[in-house]
Length: 147
Length: 147
DNA sequence: TTTTCATGTAACTTCGTTTATTACGAATTG
DNA sequence: CAATTCGTAATAAACGAAGTTACATGAAAA
Image (tube, rainbow over all chains, first blue to last red; front, top):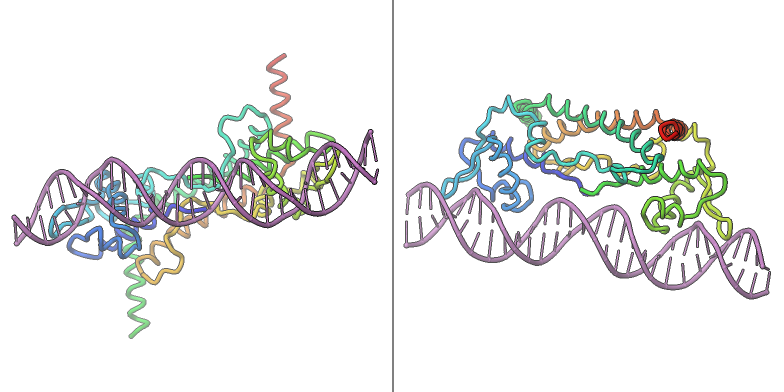
């Protein structure tokens, strides 16, 4: 099954934007995340609507972060992306007239909802600042290792 | 995103099989789960390889359960189906050379693995017998309501 | 033993979704 | 005004899952 990797992509883009002073173009982002500039604009457009980034046209244009890294959680980004379906597994149909199916769905739904709740909780505990800090740590560690 | 509903389908089929004495044909199962007999055979074939069901050819042929309902967990069925991908969301690539991506992936992976572990634990706690009992309860309740 | 029923399986087709691409418009800078 | 960059609609391509066809195999019954 093909996975939706936009959350991962968007995080990658945001951290790169956080690392640099000026704006970054869709083309640069597309190159760094191996996709197409239009796809970048589409996805980042959602973040712009949520006020997380700003975009500017024309020369010296591009994308900038406009939110405080410490206040943006991964859960918030997930929601901003339209809360895409989390599970690749699910029930066959949602309106079962069959009692057997009702039993099956009830059992599966409960398990999946628990797991989803845990996932969203965890994503809600991680901010962009946390990821940036983790990156700095890795960066420093690599410089240590190479020296 | 399209979801894999085979676990749900298989449970539905198994409970129907548990409710009846004789074997049930692929055609009957296909009708009751709105799919094609060949699809049923493909899926049930995996359960047969795992020893959970038996199939017989020819007249009076079809499918029967050959395992104790109390010992088969939903987790086991999930595994029997080839442990299909659970999440519809995931990382962009799995071999990141980019440190930013490493940070992103590490954070996401941990959250997803926790949720997956919880889901598998829950699925491991539910047996076919549990579902059959739940079905009986619903069945009795409906007869109550109708009388 | 022949007929019928039912599974076993490979090959192919269809379908739906996602992503990529093209094309053109709008805005901004110098 | 020329160059740059985003905005967005429309279309194409890619992909995987499911459905379908076709034919073979085996078992029971007439």
